[in-house]
Image 1 (cartoon, rainbow, N blue to C red):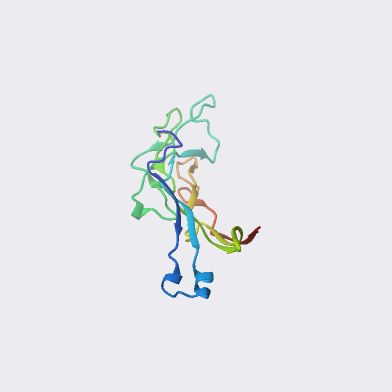
Image 2 (cartoon, rainbow, N blue to C red):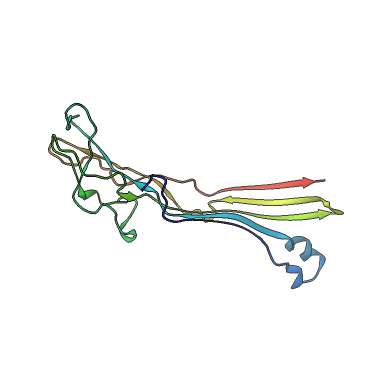
Length: 192
């Protein structure tokens, strides 16, 4: 498994001409205000990438002799079911232990999946033509992360053990970052 692996990755690009309101109420004002609107967007729905867990010690102990790297000890399943995950507990932190001196840990490179992504970038726009199609006014409303759903982006994956083997990092296994909130932009463009 590679660090760039995503089990599921769906990206949809779309553009839709909204139905003309003047078909229901045929008059000039309705045609000018409510006709010729379009919606376009890019929707991304992706699972999280694989992640590993590292560790440090409060006493700076050289557990392998010679300063070589070491792996953490795992005593159970690290991944939690989706219904069990929360902001404060993304994976099971209770299954990790400090390796004893001279013992190389048993952790693999990837132990759980990080947060996925459910992002909707959309644009709503209307083209108001003047005398010809070459001259027009365009109204645009652009939304990035349109539903403004909080999406996690990082998890604290570093355990910190004291000499007795107690894990002391209070944020171990917690969410540490989020993706950008909804951003909106409104613009008017005149083409002639």
